[in-house]
Structure formats: C-alpha cells, structure tokens
Length: 134
Image (cartoon, rainbow, N blue to C red):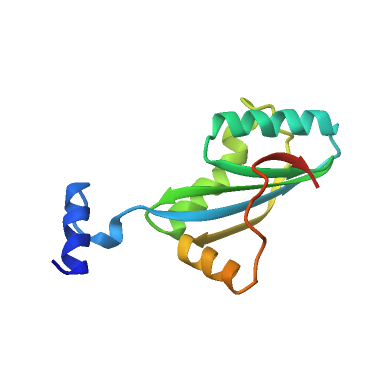
C-alpha cells in the first residue's frame, strides 16, 4: 500500500475526505506584556494556566512580561494561530492571569520546528518543563 493510500485511509477513518484536513501539531510561542504585576501573582496564574491547559510545555515570566510555549493540534496554521490568540484572554479570569496584551506570536509546524533546531536556529526545546522566571 502506498503512502498516499495510507493517508487517505487514515483521513477517512477520522471522518476527513482529504489527508490535508487532518489535524497537525504546531509549536506555539505566545508573548504577553503589560503593567508590572507582583511576580508571585504572575507565577501562580501561569501555574494555573498549565493546569487548565495540559499541553503547556513551559512558561517564563517577569513582573511585566511572560512567554508561554506549547504544542497545539490544528488543521492548519490559521486555526492554530486563532486558538493561540484566544488562549490568554480565555484563561485570564479562571487562571487569574494579569490583564496583559499579546505582543508576539510564533506558530511553526512540527517539521519546521525540528528542522530549525537541527540547524541551530530558533529557541532551544522548552526545557525544563514548567513555570520559570526569565
């Protein structure tokens, strides 16, 4: 069985007509900033976000900015970016996150992420996992 037939069978098994419609993994880096907030509150909010959003890999924070990195499953870049742009606002109240604005967003597919790392470009893998100060 050829690779194309395998992709079609997999797509049909999930109810998709075309393999291009299958969800893919996207590496998200979301940067936010705003008014100074006690770092203990920022940390507590990011820890709650990690609990609420289990795919969160790592967060780094200071009293006026933070960076969140995680994997998102989506059909295409547009869908992944749309979900990422809603993440902070949708969890702001429940996780008690600071009222900061999104100032940066990077979305790359899994292959591009790993290729960049192999070539020595881009940020290193999100280790250690968890919430850490800058």
